[in-house]
Image (tube, rainbow, N blue to C red):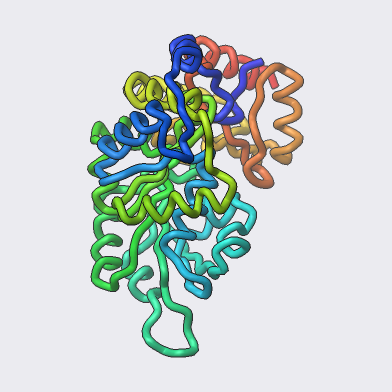
Length: 338
């Protein structure tokens, strides 16, 4: 099988497996795990923040961030197809007691003017705006890169209104590599950020949230409240260190393979590519064939290619460490036959 469902399906490298076996560990709830501490210090430095916290998943990292930034009754501004709104089970309402206010965007980039207009005033009938959430790259827009200029403009609006910004940067390193910039150039326009270690970076488990010392101190308590206090967690941190030190630059290969996949699909009658393929995600439109995406995904699976339905006539294909260019060519041949 050629698995293009997600970059979450990557298996840990041999170096990661060895690092897990050899990891020095301790009880992280007591702050005694040296490998966790090393990972958090490394991540904070890479992301340009004072401190960082290892969490079990990107969703947990986003939820902890909202819980730490907001109080019950706040309103959170975010893009209408953002992961926090679309794929996290309504958790920010269930856990943090906040309401969401969604805004339209251009390929995941919200208009700063819309943001400014949506920030609440002092009317007692209105909730206070507690947080603005951005997403980069943007999953449902096909791994689209939200431009730095857009992030900067929104950050300036938010700062003027004293509203913090949290960035869901699950695939932020894909954006940084594609733009040939450091992740700090993106995170400078955020108060907090979440990045996934277990997607394109290849680690088996975990994410990082980063922010000020004060923020991470409070976030650590929320992690404990959510059952996220971990014991000998260095075995999970060790592959995360390798992810951040050895797996970043090679994301360029995934991005290039996605472009190659997209160009090949454009040449197949009845199919089109619905996104600009900025990074490692290709959205395939099956509407011209008159085939629902779920049916097409089943046909692909029968032929040895795994993908996911991403809408009534949209199929998502994601490149990653465990898919080679040769396999992309093989997948294109399979798609051509179908």
